[in-house]
Each structure stands twice: as structure tokens, then as C-alpha cells.
Length: 241
Image (tube, rainbow, N blue to C red; front, side, top):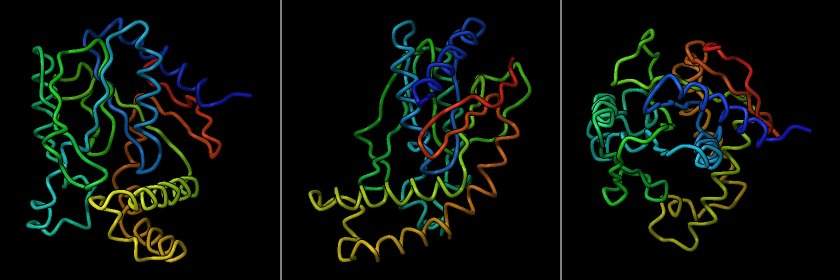
């Protein structure tokens, strides 16, 4: 039976083939909140590291800080396109193409930009830039300020909700040992109360963002990967073939 490693291996092979035509390949990877983009990026790096110099970065570091979002009345829209500094993303990719670039970091514990997590990297063979904040890419050949290709990690809305709730509960439990965690704000809740709250967050914020801004990128993606409830992965569209 196929499993997630089969899909990761297939996508890694495909990126290796594309890398032959692109020195310093930048692969954008997007999909819904809770779809597993970070896990997929790490899995791809683990496979590709045997052959290539690979770096993984998240677009989360290009979110505007919480103070800026609050000032602009965007706190409850975090993750929507207008909450990302897309100019800074382009600047970083352009700098990387010329040698090296700084990539800011985001803490999912404090739920804010963390300057201590900034990383400076030299141009790798393959950069996997995962997260939200992407726009449809220009027709090839693409400028240095854009990824060379866009991968979309697809899943059903029911599966995405289940994974979102699982992650919310996991981070909530971890907050019992870390008073600085954003999720410590919810420790006064019982688990059933937390699940009701988390589902409301999904329905008010993440689901509208998915439907209005993230899912439409699937039609513009170069490669579409489908993830099932059991985490099986398969390439279902390859528009670069």
C-alpha cells in the first residue's frame, strides 16, 4: 500500500529533474493551514539532501509583526494575503539569487515574529519555500523575485479541519509546560470547550481564507499533490511534464 513516503519520494525525484534546468531552484509550496506543508518540506529535504544542498524556509517569517497587524486592524486576518510583506519575500529571493539572503523567523509558540529565528542562507541547489502569502506566478521564465515553480498541497476540507483541531489540542497541551506559549491563553478551557473554540477559529478565519485565497492557487500551481486522511500523498497534476 502506498504511504506518505511514496508521494514524497515521487515529488523529490520530480524536483531533481526540474533542478537540472534551474540552478538554485526555488520551489514554492502552499496549501491550507494544517495541510502539513512544513512536514512535507522537511520530508522532501531529507530525501533530496543525499544529492543536493537543500534549504527549507517558511513564508511565516514574512508575516507582519502582531503589533503592525493590530495597528492595521488585521489581527483576525492573520494568514490572509494582506498580512504578508510580499515585497520582502521578493527582496529575499532576489538577494538569494545573487548569493545569500536573510529569512526572518516566526514562532508558533509566541504566535509572532521572532528576530532570534532569522537565518542567513547562501544560495542552495534547491530552496523549498513553504507557507501562505503566495500569488499566481508569472509565465515562465519567471523573475528572480518569484519561485521557479509552485506546488499545491491539496486535501479535503473535512480532513483539514480534523488536522487543525488535532494540532490545536497538541499545542494547547504543550502550553502547560510553557507559560510563554500563545496557547497558554486557553488553558482555562476544558478540552471540549477548546474544541468548540478551535472550530470557530477555523470557520471564521481559516476556512474563508482557504476558499477565497488559498484554494484558487491550485489552478495556477505547476504541481498538485493530494493528501488523504491517512496522510497518503500522490501527485495528481504535473503541468511541467
